[in-house]
Image 1 (cartoon, helix red, strand yellow):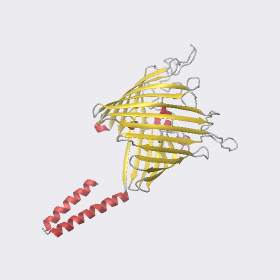
Image 2: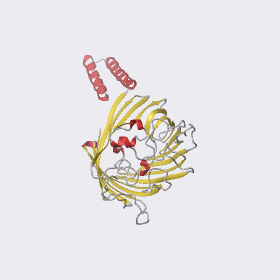
Image 3: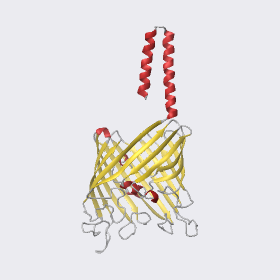
Image 4: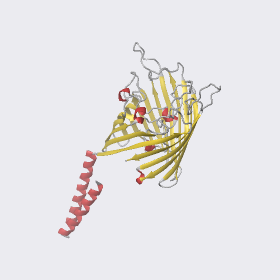
Length: 401
């Protein structure tokens, strides 16, 4: 549209010059043209702009343990999305529509495919290949203060569901064991371009509806201490307990404190850190929970290097501890455990960045359980759980538009 405005302006001025050489005529014609451009731009801001974007991703994963089930999940939740091995798999297809003007924005973000089911587990009514990942609108009261209502992706964590936005293809355990999305209302105030604060009220963790009458509290403090350094301090606190048979709501809580930060050291090198500490007491959405407060947490270190415009290399180290057993990552006996994970990922960009190919090596190492008869974390080619570590090499194929 902007090119059209400039063309109209460039045509009007010469035409007026041919009609006569009077300076006042030129001035008047020029002012008329500028007024016309201004009116069109203001009209554009009122009407707003539609945009359509999305992506699709697929992958192949080779598991060196050659598990009989061809699953990368191990005893429980070792992977969140790239769970299949020894076969080509569709990951996710996304279609996102946004409408934006100077005062507001509306977003409808739909996902399809196997990962849509896993990312939308909290809504049983939508447990199909189609999921509403996000559906929200934002109103800008001023250029500093805005409010958002609807279903939106979580603010917690370094990584996101969308494969093109992450450097690594396989997702961290911190991502896997944290919230995916929330439904509610949040407000953001920007004190400056270096400091902002978000606070909101949501139903619960990963649910469009609410399993009780309690509401969760979310918040995020953003700070940019220096150029190219971003720091996010994230928080959530909620009661996730199901009411009892008499309708009483038990005393319980789920809490996460999360730190996410990245620093662009140079044009080619980016460093990042994600650390989270969580606590839980009582029931969690009907799955039970500890009578006393139990904790979990971990951290991940990221390093991404752009070797050329078309090729980059990224490394991630993560330590995740769920020895308390309150989150989903447990061992073959159902008890809590911890893991060290090492991931090395390449990024190959083709077709002006629309195509991304990501070769990836990953090693997950769990504690070796004592005793010859003890079942370990991962399955072997005979279907027995004899391995306490897992090595995979895969390739992701992504198209974004």
